[in-house]
Length: 256
Image 1 (cartoon, rainbow, N blue to C red):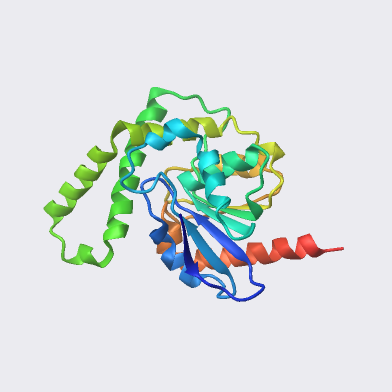
Image 2: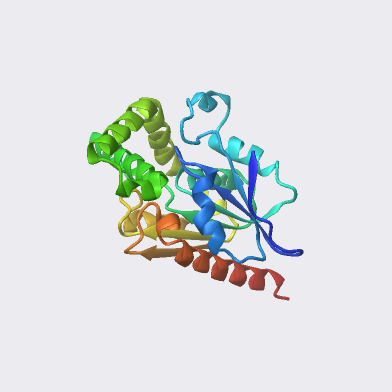
C-alpha cells in the first residue's frame, strides 16, 4: 500500500520512502514535512512493518517486496529515501541491476564489510543492538506520552515488544546484515547518498567508509550526533542534505 504524505506541485519530483523493520510508514511524517513542498512524497507500507508475523520471508526476497511496492507508484520515482532495513532492501535491489529511482538516500543501512568475519561476538553484539533499536523505536512511536507514562509500564511494553518480535525478527535483520557483504555494490550506478551516525552502533565509521568506497557513485556523510533514528530526531537536517544531494544529482544529469 502507498500513502501520500505530501501532494507536491505540478512538475515536482516524486520521492518514495521505505521504512525499516518493525517500523511504520507513519514514522516518515516529520521528514516529509521538512522536505521541499514541491515534492510529491509517497510512503510505502512494507511487509516488515511493526507487528508483522514474518511469513513474508517465505514469499520473496526483500528486494522483490520493495520492487512490488515501487510498481504501485503512479510513475517512476525520482528519489527513493530508505531507512535501516528498508535501506538494505534498496541496496539489494540496486545490486540486482534494477535502479529504483534516479537517486537514492540510504539512512543508517545495515552493512557488513566483506572482510568482516561472522563470529559469535558479532552475533551477540548484533542481538544487543537489535534490542536497543526496538526500545528506541518504541519510545519514538509513543512520543509525547512518554512524559506521563510510568517507567515500569514502559519497560513492560518494551519487553513485550521484544518477545513478540522474537528470534524470527532478529534473524531476519541479522541475515540481511550478513548478506550485505556479498552484494555486487561495485555495479550500482545509481547516485546514492549514505547517511550514518556516530551514535548509531549498527553502522560503524569503518563499515560506512567501506560501503561508500565500494559504491562508485556514493556520497557518504557521517555525523557524530546522528543515531539510528536521525531521520526523525533531526528531520530538518536530513531533509536539507537530501535536497542538496538531489539538486546536485539533477544538475549533473542535465549537464550537456
